Image 1 (tube, one colour):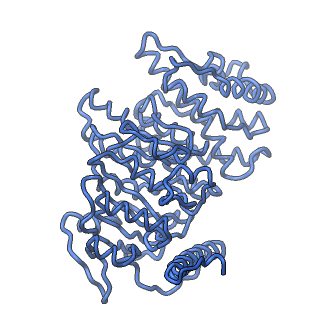
Image 2 (cartoon, rainbow, N blue to C red; image 1 turned 180 degrees about the vertical axis):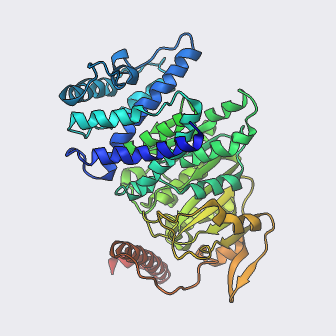
Image 3 (cartoon, rainbow, N blue to C red; image 1 turned 120 degrees about the horizontal axis):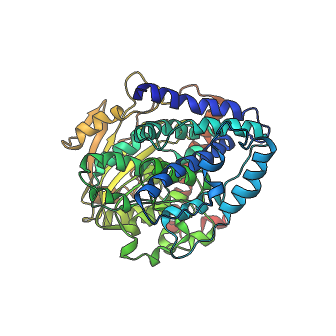
Length: 498
């Protein structure tokens, strides 16, 4: 079978599975369909990897009991003994899940073994029809993950599955468009000797973009050890499971991905061993953290906004001479509340914030209409000057969408500008401009610069319109609160008491 035909068949398989699951009364919505599909996929992929490890390692011992290995229960041998119906449900619910959730780990348990328990700790079997479940298992078993070409062809199809996150309830927050991750990696230029981290890694987009970027530099088995330097943390179970599977598909046998909340650790406790050469992130924003989490940060950097707290973590965990690229909403740029001002002061004084790319609207549609930016900085010196560049919507586009997503070629103008920086003025407004640290300080750290000109308001879908207005109201509230706070300080009273 030619690779192109293979890809078409593999792409179709996701639709086939979804069509079967829609007939099962136990599954409610895309998010549950996705989770159901992915834990089954994980078991199939993990079994293929185990067959490799068994061949390569004479002393390899599986952490999964023989009866629970995919090859021993999922493969339909057409001998009349294949589990289906109520027997399959009984096996899945009362043997497979119970056993894998309760695997005992010891100090000798390797990473590639312990991920099995970590993956199943928060997974569920939603399907109630054992015959339909058998049909899903049979479709997944058609893919031969032991064949290198087929596994890697599926690695590309896996992107299709990850994109479905964007329409699966609130799960879209875990998926950063591949064009964005590829661009950020390209500009930061990680090397095979760099340690690379994402402290809210979602499905692993920045890590897989790094793997793809470094593939050209892999000349030997020794070079492949760079994969040990990739590190991620993910708080929620579904994207964690997606990320682990993603890493296995990219031939990372021992994914260094933690299941937990980065913000739960006190930033003052970080030592050099907790720091990284390269940090690439699109931290969650718009959410708020409870007081116990906020207490893990110095008073001047303590706020409830999730993205602000992650910015603190990034600055505490970036190695000397390290580089970082971070996606942040407009609110970080124009925000003049104490926390945001102190974060920007620290960023400009202790780090070299050399570039801010203003992204066009709807890059993250349909998950959020919030306008975002990419901040590039390093830990080489303090900031002397910061370049702002506005990346306009490509010609012929009014919005990005699921059917017309942002592509890496849309970054071509900024890539061409990057190494030959010049100020650009269009219709009396700056599209690209350099500002000194002193100029940014004089602006009161409101660095909403080289923004988009006012455009005629478009007609949006009702739900998107409501979200858009809510975000605009939140932004205006932040500006008003900040202004009132500054006035109250000048007048010497507390605005909250009025």
